[in-house]
Image 1: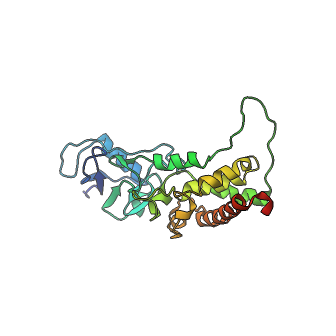
Image 2: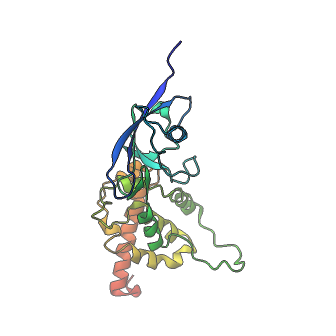
Image 3: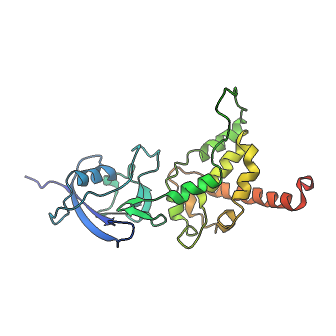
Length: 253
């Protein structure tokens, strides 16, 4: 009788935000079509390490399980990606799982992405309209603009682009590619454009567009293929024009 196939997984764990990280190895029974999350669920069901020692269940974030919410992002074999779409059969073993380094660790593979969400608030990444009564149909976007705006709307705030960006780190307040691209998206919207100057001023500070080093890691890492560097280039032009307008007045343009 042949041996049952197992999966070796090495997890970087951390019990509290202040404690030291450590590695723990697990062996999980193999099933066809498993993804990383199903392997983590197996460990949670029976939290015993590879040496047979009882341990605590691994903590991680997840929600949609279909690469839409972005919550299950982690570093898998050295690359930040979504664990729901990471298939076991396509990963080299032992599979190494670690939390993203850009964000503070809460516990194990779970991180605090508040840095990114706070930046989205700063750039007002929404359409501020009065929803207390029916405003009727909104203005339509030209089809050509709608097509590229749709590509930007695919962002799921997973944080992978921030993890890949060398300018986003503990020593820098740079908001990163995702919030910047969302500023461009909402400035392009016919209704969102009424807050265009406010968004541009929000990204003209020390933590904004000027801190982009143009490494282009973000566009290579983005799981949705969003043209982030195109957005950054467009925002560079827009903020330059806004600075010119601020200095000389709107009549100068």
